[in-house]
Amino acid sequence: MQQKSILVTAPSGAGKTTLVKRLLSEFDFLEFSVSATTREARENEVDGVDYHFISEEVFRAKIEKNEFLEWEEVYGGSFYGTLKSEIDRIHAQNKVPVFDIDIMGAMSIKKKLCNHVLSIFIAPPNMEVLEERLRNRHTETEEKIKTRLDKAHSELKFENFFDKKVVNDDVDRAYLEFKHLITNYLGL
Image 1 (tube, rainbow, N blue to C red):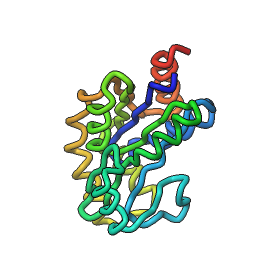
Image 2 (tube, helix red, strand yellow):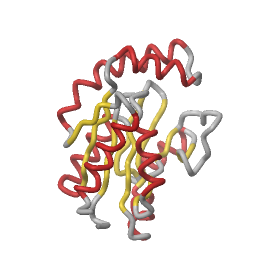
Image 3 (cartoon, one colour):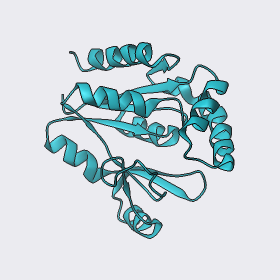
Image 4 (cartoon, rainbow, N blue to C red):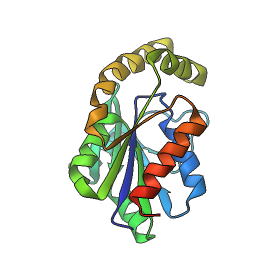
């Protein structure tokens, strides 16, 4: 089972993190792959749990040392990436890594891990619901919300690149579908 990985991606606000957290609370053999980022932590985020919050200087040094499985500059100036050491940490525990990352990073991981990863695209039911979810977070400026919505329009075009798609119109229904896809993939 440790050779397999789960990759979850979505436009910002589609609900991927909600689904992933619920999955992780149910299955102890799954382990969240903590991404690195240069953005500031939100009020409820914890370093080393939600993200590894590092400076741009440190991030760039890690790029130079080839320490990332993948990395992207997202939203102009904020870097996100998956550290190889994070995957090594999870595999050393004989657990299955679960990646919760943006579209471009997900495409990169899917290409690198090929048949060893199940990739799932979480889609919002429509753009109006996505905008409402982003606004209800109360964590972003109006400018950042607009940027995320503009990006979501283009990201939705990539949904067919991934193995499966789950429309998050109702979180309980979406979770059951999401969980079923993963348990089938892992042979449970």
